[in-house]
Length: 318
Image (cartoon, rainbow, N blue to C red; front, side):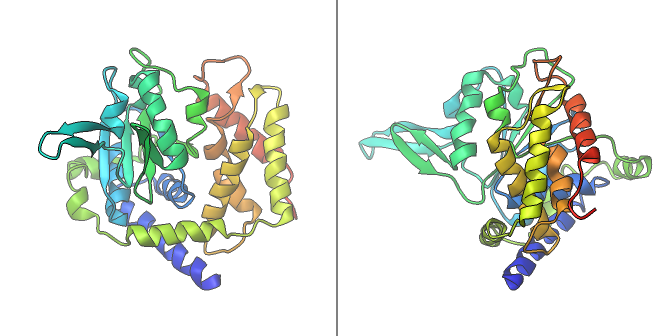
């Protein structure tokens, strides 16, 4: 097991290092995104336009040697525009299925909240089960499969709020923020990296190696003390006075999956409390509901509440 963990850790670290060569100044964001990949999860990026969301997705896809597709979500986008559609072939005298852009290893769902709820729901089966259904037939998606969805948290005109059932499919919600002044000065001086990903980012692994690393994550041990710590944090979100709804059971499952992946990135075959602490806010803030705001607009406040819970909850062994 130690050898498998070491290899999986090298794979994860190589992706982080390579993506960080173009996505500058935000190593924690890159590490958490790769953690989500190893945990077979999906990521919701909430940030203003121009923060590098597309750049991060393309860099990860390039580093793993996987197929990348970008879908611009708009009000007139149909579910079949994402999943694919069956068309009649006069030559073969039968219907042929044409795959949609969802058939890729890394899919960027850009401004996902601009599509109608019907179209958004087309993503649920793909994100939950790694497959799409069309004409009564289920078709498996490539593996690894990761959706990186984006939305602007400050613009709500012409958008549809993501329902809780869809938010719950994202293992993490990440915000990028502005880079440090020196880093931003360098990015501006070189004209950005958006058009340089294909030539700058190298393929450092392959989809098969990523699948093997994901299998290693599944085998990571969670000691009883760490499990108790994680479940105690989950319970604390359900009894927190500022929150009217805490983490669900699926949220707890995803929290532990992310913690296992974080442990693998650190080269360990077992979890420690620091793994849970590292992913708790990112894996939980989009799943809880602030008591005085039921419209899901209090994401930053939810993150602050979870950070406060994390800071005061006793850590095993301390």
